[in-house]
Length: 322
Length: 100
Image (cartoon, each protein chain N blue to C red):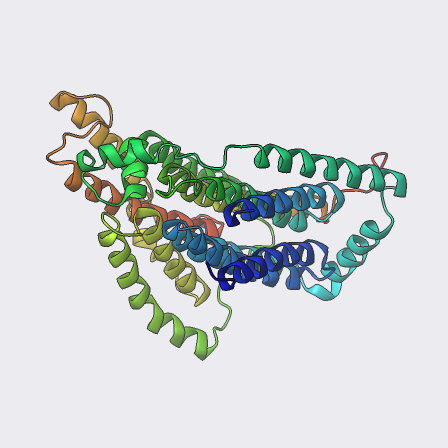
């Protein structure tokens, strides 16, 4: 047992806490969001340290990439920093320093310390060796149709959760579309710099390739529908940033079909296996691998489109109507 | 102290920091950031506790992956709500005093 991993973990953990402290306290919101992106990348490193490469892939694509892009775009839409942001930031800082009353602030800190100590005590008093459900998963992994345990849990053993989660994504998009047409929506025809346009052209095919690879490899190695879908979503965000929009022909029905494809196909497969003579979402062993790949392919497409649409924030066809 | 326990405690630290920031900061974008930090803390706790045996428990991993995707959809919704609040009231901060 060398000392090196110990030091590495310590540096990772404390840097993460320090970054969180900095990003929550920094008076400049732009700086806070950039720190949040660094925070996400550091989280991805920690996932690798904790033997969770599947989570690391999802975090690197979503936690660090897409969330950061989303928040930066939101900050840009809040208005020029000279008017709103700097005033808000001053207010923000003042309120941190004194607002709300000092006694209240002291009570709050004390309360949070008690909460942290209580939670810490609860975690420390847990048994230090607990296999959890890993044995159960390992025992029935051969029946699941895939050999990556995380994919097996996501799309076979706990397929219900994943099905409902696709529904949550779709609901979020519905809510965003219903609220979306904000008065200060970003101007559409901003000139795009040559570097960004070139980067989008170079990276998009590469991202598509990576998404396809992650989808294909997900059955037996880290990867899968969520990781592939978020890479696809990143490609969509890049295209949106480079000024590319769906053509009017595709923005209506074809787009909506792609958005719901994952959920619909998931449910269709679930019902189909009932017809064949099983329970909802209980795939027969022989065809489980193929069915999972089919669901994952549709889910990847839908997740990617939904994430890109969430980033865009307004209905793609709303401008065509005007 | 084993290292997964250290990361579990870091997760609790992140959760508490985020919760404090949600309460204290009036700016809505900062609250969204803080809720994301809270979520990261919970994810870290879950995955760290999944490593309590030689064979890593994949169920919390799957939960966290779904959680990350749900977190970004919730963030997107929160951002749109914030922009809507800005559009309706012209401000992006909650009022300091309730009698305003």
